[in-house]
Image: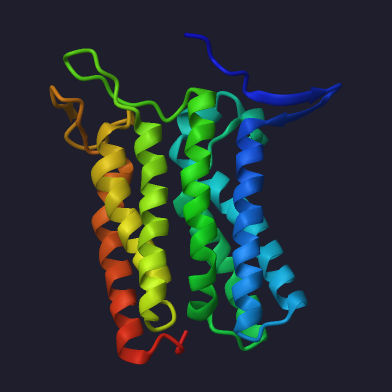
Length: 250
């Protein structure tokens, strides 16, 4: 079976990769929801445009930074590859962390609620997770483990389905109109659990502790699985906090 070229369009020295296309679509779609819902909450266009710019730039930097740090053994041999974001290699954890940390000073300056606006970025994050995993298929990365029967788990598909599930959960929560921030922290909680329990189990990542793979292709424990309990507890606590304080204290 042939593979799809990583490059979608090549015009002289300029090239558009599938990974970049899917990322751009996710950002554009996410911005649409942020702008639409932000306007409904009374935020101005300039504020929302600037916020999006900050989140996207800081998110990409954070995503690449975490990916490079956790795969340093590869990048130390080829430092020039660090800037090749178009070839894939972004961490969703780093994207969320980088975007959030960069947005906080801007939100405080304008006396805007972090929780209120964080809810609005959930659709973009879910769409990004669902789409970018298809770019991983084209790039032949984020591969799954093999079972003893020779079946290779489609880890990229598992990851994409997690994005779809998160979008469905967010849509269901939106109809219930929970306190601001509840949807965002629910997203972080459920993504952390689904990623750690399902995708990471069948994804052929290095095993840091334990280091065994079962006959059905499950591997334990990857770096993401090791930090899953900590992230899940933090997200659960912050989500619970929105119920107690209404979410507008942040």
